[in-house]
Amino acid sequence: MMNDHDETSRKARKELERLSDQGNLSASPLLRQSTDGLRRHFSASDADQTDSSELWGTRIGRGLAAAAFVVLVFWLIFGVLG
Image (cartoon, rainbow, N blue to C red; front, side, top):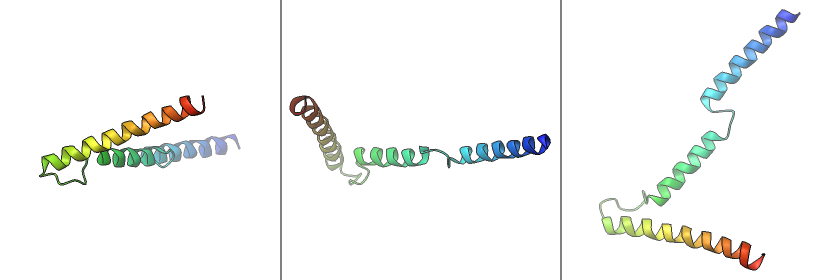
């Protein structure tokens, strides 16, 4: 009986390792997809890559928007609620 338990435990561990290698046990695939999307957004991959002024203007604009969002959040937390 103990041998069946050990065999079942070994098979379960092997299956868990296989699933872990595939990324099905954690949020890492979702996290990776989200960070890739965020990276594409801020690198302006949707802008015209041949027009450098549009490319850099989009990058700068998105960066400034992110900075303004962070400032607004801090203002809300520390200024209004604090």
